[in-house]
Structures are given as structure tokens and as C-alpha cells.
Image (cartoon, rainbow, N blue to C red; front, side, top):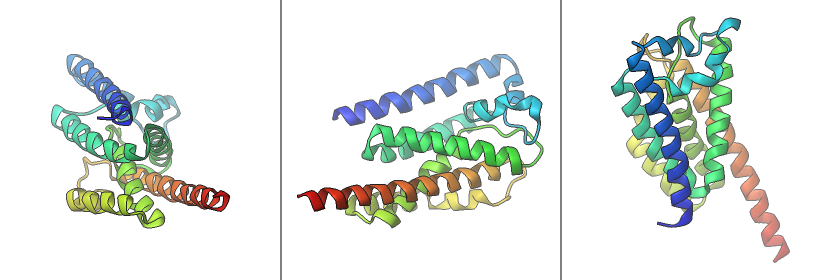
Length: 193
């Protein structure tokens, strides 16, 4: 295991541990932290813009999200830990803002908006950058996580498809932008050689 993998595991582990701690507190408080989730268009609930990814409704919700976050986070970090952090923050910010403006009037909680951001990033980056490594990762992601595409549709009333949709949109933007930037840097490096 190289230093990049160790650093990625530290970042992913910290976020995962934070989610677990928040959930344990939420269990002891009988779910009262859910009210700190994202409640669209309510000025009095702006804390939800920051807090919603870390709050989960049940252990199964949390564990399902953490498993996907771990796998997709490690795949994104193959391009560096800073890449994981950038995609995480972009997905968090855009999904929060998108849900706040356009989401249904109910509490939105969970890490899945960011997970969709990681997922979409990996797919769009591979399509734009077209390296063997990025395409191989995208094929693996589609094989194991291809069914995630259904999560952007309002299939279940209890599921925040809006978080998924805006998280995926954010990840696609990050994938497009970072692939373009990486290709430009690669071209500049080749020109200097």
C-alpha cells in the first residue's frame, strides 16, 4: 500500500467515522438530529446545507452509504487524495444548493448525494479523458454500480432522488472540468518535452 492509498483511507475513514459518531448520537437522541437535515427553502434550516450528508435515518442507511462511499472514494482517489477532496466538496456544495432550491419540502439526509457525485465523476471523467486506467475504472463502476442510475428518478417517496440528481450533476461537472484540465496539462507537458 503506497502513501496515496494510506492518505485516501485516512480521509475516507475520517468522514466515515464522523458519520458513525453522528449516527450514534442520533440514535441516543431518538432521531432528533434528523431535524438538522436539509429542509428546502427554509431559511431557519440553513444548517442542513452543511449537516445533511452526515445524518442518516437508520443503521442500514448509514452502512449502505458508507460501503459505496468507501469503494467509490478509493476509486476517485486513484488520481490523488486532493482529487477526492475536490469532488467531495463540489458534490456536497452543488447537491446541497440544488436540493435547497428544488427539493421536496421534507428533510433530506444522507451521504448519497455525494456518493452520486463520486459515481458520476468517475464515469464522465473516463468519457472525457479516455485513458486506459479511467476507462477500466468506469467499466468496473458501471458493472457494480450501474443500477444507481435509477436513483435519480422519484421511485420511492422516502428517497431523496433530488440529492442523487444534483450530486450526480455536480460529479459530472467535476469530471468534465478535471478531465479537460488534465488533458490540457498533459498537452502542455508534451509540448515542453
